[in-house]
Length: 286
Image (cartoon, rainbow, N blue to C red):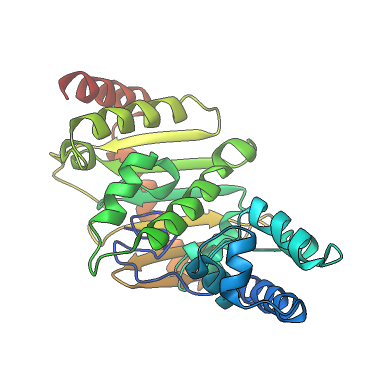
């Protein structure tokens, strides 16, 4: 699915997934937390009873495999008398465990981009997904994901989606294949909600959505999905993703080639107005 998030979106990233990897910040928090627990003379089971959280949750947080919720951090501070250390460490935690390792470098550039262009032909891009649509993608991943993994992937995707509204000066362009909506992934209600959501986002001044019609004799994107971004220094970078892998592209000639293809697709896709009109028609037909 793209975005290194298991379902075109940035977690355990293409459709594939696997358990999100441990980030340095979560691993560090886990070690600090474990040191304070041992200093207090408590076993994981004893601490879990005091918080209260499951022993499994406590163990995963110590291993850096679970993002500690604010109430967990607060209770741990009280129970372990941690002098504010755990609260301070929690401020620097990264949700990267929900991101695939191959997507993380791109995600860092994405968060600061002044322009971000996305072409997708497999699933609706992660930045545009609803929770119901995203969870459908996660549930359908193979091998199957556990509930913790699905939650981590959704939280990472939800965090990334804030970019659309929190960076109003960033220009977002999306070219989506018509069949992504006709497939009705997740069922009728999920598809209706998804189309409504995309239409609402398309009303933002910094978001453009174009639909590539199903019948198109000439198509510049036949080699597959792509993402392009412009850095604050006005440097262009690119990213492509396959199953269980992603390719970060910075070579000027390759980036220029992908820019050329994207520009051609913008002319081949329906206009902004016609794209929204088609989405509205599909919404009525669902």
